[in-house]
Length: 264
Ligand SMILES: Nc1ncnc2c1ncn2[C@@H]1O[C@H](COP(=O)(O)OP(=O)(O)O)[C@@H](O)[C@H]1O
Ligand SMILES: [Mg+2]
Image (cartoon, rainbow, N blue to C red; front, top):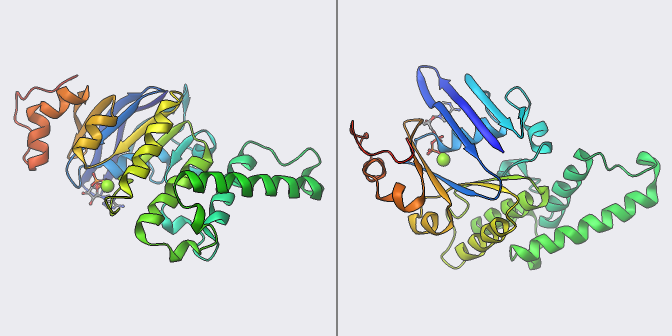
């Protein structure tokens, strides 16, 4: 189980994430919603270790991760979608996915029984990784673009490549930050189907930041609302979406005192 306790970050005097305490169970999909600037991306960055917490803690399966650097958290099972800035723009799409697989395997200590000098083993592993990369690319409908440079992909395909690399890591916690943003209408279902199929395995914890409320309503087991960095609502989708606090958050107004806060 993933848990944040009083997780907080301040940028100067601005509190971007404000004492957020939340638990996320395996087999569930939780959407994190809130207006622009609410702190959703920053919350993900604190969980994945891209930003250091000013206060509070991150726990995964009873181990505290707060002080660990991002790559170590990745090896512990926290999967944050790669940003394109983390990719190798001049390598092919498939090589990028292959490197994610290789990073996963080296994190698991699978260097082959005879270490780095076992060339035959290295060759076999490499073949297997290329094949696996191709399977994942087929899943995200990028199979026919495997030879293209990552930098040459149009925006929607770049987002699919991010998802492919996240899948390649085989994390226990998937964090999707607006995975369909900037996609054309016909590309959106591909990504939503992938998230559905990850959810159907029932062994992963999925966190989703998404603005499309119909998508959120359909996919989520639970919705958490952030407003000005603070958690202001937490509960089942229908209840949270109908609550005054969400209606107000989406209108950009501050929650009124006494507003119904599901789960609070
Ligand atoms: N590295 C940073 N330095 C200073 N302020 C930041 C930084 N990252 C985010 N912020 C601020 O934190 C707040 C939350 O941003 P963000 O998490 O990106 O919101 P959201 O993803 O909900 O739209 C915003 O006011 C943003 O300007
Ligand atoms: Mg954001």
